[in-house]
Image (cartoon, rainbow over all chains, first blue to last red; front, side, top):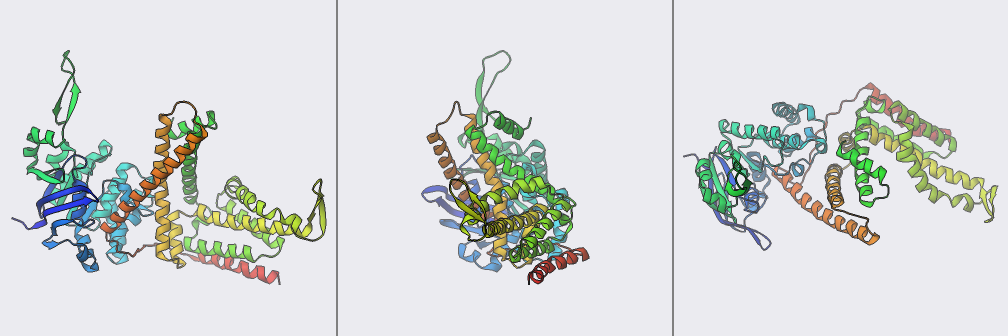
Length: 264
Length: 284
C-alpha cells in the first residue's frame, strides 16, 4: 500500500462559534483520486483549506507527506515553499485566484514566488499555455475572460508547478457544458499521471469517472466512504446527506408526483 | 439586443430613472476601459514605443510643463501633446471629453477669482459688480488652466496608449516599489469584479421594482448597497490573500518583464529629455 499523502485525525475547526469540522478523520494515499461529497455547508471547502495549510485546525492533527501541518512550521520559508511546490489548490471562484494583470503573469506568479530562473519561467509558462490551449489568451486581462476560460487559466496557474497533490473545490460549478466536459476530461486523465487528486463536489454525475474513492461529509464529519459506485447505490445515505433531491415529473397521463432520485 | 445595449436603450428612453442611471454609469465605466484597451492595442506612434521609455519621456514632458513660465512655451507643449495624440490615433473628441472639459471646469473654478484678484493693468470691468479683470490676472488663470490641461493630456496619452500591465511594469523600471505596483495592479483588477457585482446588485433591485422611488428610498438603497459591497470586498480580499498564499506568496511580490527597446525608443527619450532643457534655455 502506498504512503499517505494526507492523514487527518480528530480534526475540528470552527469559524468563531460556528463549527465547520468536528472530530474528522481521514487518510488519502499517494496517487489516489478522492471525491469529497457533501451538501453546501458540510465542511468540504474548509477541509480542503486545512489540507492546503491555509487554515489550521483548532483540535486534532493534519499530516501531509508524514509531517504535521502547523502554523509555526509553515512560517519557515523553506518548509512553506517545499509544501507549496508539492500541493496545488484550485479555488471554487476563479476570480479570487486570478489576481495578476494578465494571463501570462498569472501563470508566472507561482514559479516567481518559488524563485525559479526567469528564462525557465518564460519557457514553462509558454509550454503550459500551449498545453491548456490558452496561448491566445496570454496577454488578456483576467476580467476579460469567460467563466470557462478563467477556470482553465486558474487550473493552468496551479499545474505549472506540477504539484504532486491537486486539491479542487467544486471544479465544474458554473461552467458551460463544453468547459465542464473539458474539466472532467482533465480529471479523468489524472488517473494516468500518478498525481493525488482530491475533488470537493456535490455533482454526483461525475463522481465515478473522476474518483477511485468517495468520502461523504455531513455536519463536519465523514459519515461514509467507499467506491463511488458503492456510495451512489446507497440512496438512503444520499437522501440523509441532502445529496439527492425530490424532482417533480409525470409518467404518461398520470398525476405529477415527486420522489428522490439521481440525475444519471 | 445584448444585455448591455438593452440597459443603455432603457436609460435613453427613461432618462432620470435612478437605478437605470446607476447601472448605466457602471456600464459606461466598463466601456471606457474597453475603448482604452482597443486604443492601446493600436499601431500609433506612442503605442509602438517601449512602455518604460514612453513613461520616462512623458514624465519629462510633464516636468517641462511645470518648468514653462511663458505662455508661448506652454502653448508649444500643448500643441506637442495634441500632435502626439493625433499620431497615436487618439481623437480630439476623446481628449475633449476625457480631459479638457473636466480639467477646465475643475481648475477654472480655482483660477477664476485670480482674474479679478491679481492686481495689474485693467482689461475689462464686470457690469453691476464693478470688478476689474486684469491682464496679469488673465495670464495667471491661463497659466494654471494651461498647465493642468497640458499635463493631464500627457498623462492620459500614457494611459490610453499603453496596456495597463505594461504601465505597471514600466513603473517598476523607474524603481517604484514593487508593493506599490502590486497594489495598483490588484486594485485595477478587482475594481472590475466589484463593479460587476455592484451592477448585478442594482440589476436585481431594478428587476423587482415597480413605480418610482422617493429620495429617502434612493438613499437607503445607496447606503445599503455600499455596505453590502464593502462586505463582499472584504470577503473577496481574504479569499485573494489565501489564493496568493496557496501559490507560494510569502510577503514579497516578484514580477516578470519582457520589454525590448530599440533605437527609436532611445531617440524619443533623448528628444523628450531635451525639451525641459530647451525650455529652461529659452526662458533665460
